[in-house]
Each structure stands twice: as structure tokens, then as C-alpha cells.
Length: 110
Length: 115
Image 1: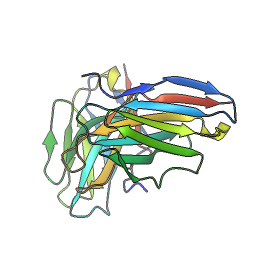
Image 2: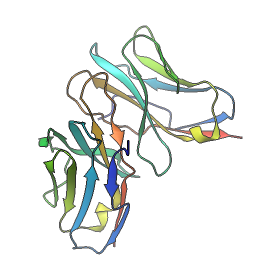
Image 3: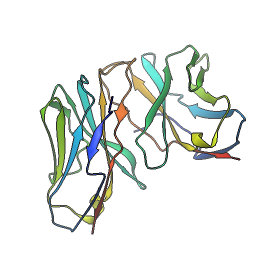
Image 4: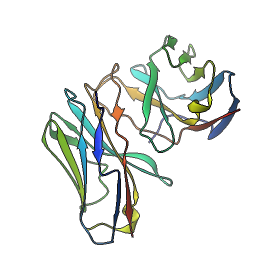
């Protein structure tokens, strides 16, 4: 079962920052937070992951609260091509495949 | 790099027929995963392999489903006999390792329709 809670849907204006929240209040010390997204009719695509420090790459930023019970994925300048379902996944650092929940359907509006 | 390759991209078959889905992982990746996606159940892990050996098949829905990985560059997911409730998009994914710094690379999926 997914260990995360995400809003089912969000809207964002094109060019603005998209902030996608994720609650993972039962996260344990060795579990990482991963974000993937799935654009319509395609396979999921990795975005970013982190343990406790904030992370940034060319796609997005990941902000993890100090108690690690929640995180936010930030797309700094959303475009129409960022319209997708975004999955927040908590997974231990060992040999465990990812378990996907329902995700958040982000609609970027022109 | 061609990424994960799946075939066919679309499959339409009649109930009771055998269906075989194929996957070619990214070269050098030791892990291969099969997922199924439906509107009702979302994205579910069916089975995964490490170095061609099945590690966990607890997600396989029933005995009608079987998966094999005869070598590092090829895997199949077979449904025999197929039923309408098997209609879904089936994704194959591969990963070089399984741990905190890995990512899973997904193929484009096979959309299966059983009538």
C-alpha cells in the first residue's frame, strides 16, 4: 500500500511555479522520497528523490520538511508539457521496488 | 540509447486467447519490472527480476499470468487464457540497481484489450 497522501488534482497557470504537496507522516529513517510523473499515454518518468535535505535538478526542486513528514515538489516555471500525473513515493533504501499510489493530476493552464 | 522497448504497443484479442507481451530492458540493467495500470487500481507491480531470476511475483493476479526472463535482454509476460478484466496498459521497466540512488526507466507500455 502507498504510504503517501496527495491531492487528487491541481491546476497551475503556465509560467508560474507549481507546488505539489505530499504527506508521508509515517516515513521511517531509512526511507527516501521519490517523485515520478506520467504524461498521458506514456510510462512514468523519474523526476527527483531525496532523504532529508532539499534537492534540486534540472527538472524540479524537492523540499522536505525537517521532521520529514511531508514534502513539496516544485516545478519553477510550469509549461503545458508539465501537465501529467505526479506520484510521490516513499521507499526504503534497500532492495524494494517502487509502489505507486494515485498521484496528483496537475493541469497547467495557458 | 533506445530505452526500454515493449511490443506490441497495442493488442486486441478475444477472451480465451493467449497473449504474450514482450520487453527488452536497457542494456546493463540488472532489474526488470512488470507493472499493470488500470483506472480502478492504478499502477500495480506484478513481478520483478534480478539478473534474470524472479524475485517477487506476489503481485501476479492469478495462475493465468506467467512471466519469464530467458536472458538479460528479453522478458515476456503471458496471459493464458485471457479475460476481459485483463484489459489494461502493461508497462515494463528496468533499473541498473535497486537502492536509494536508482531510478526505474519505463517503456511506452502495451495497451491490451480483451473482448
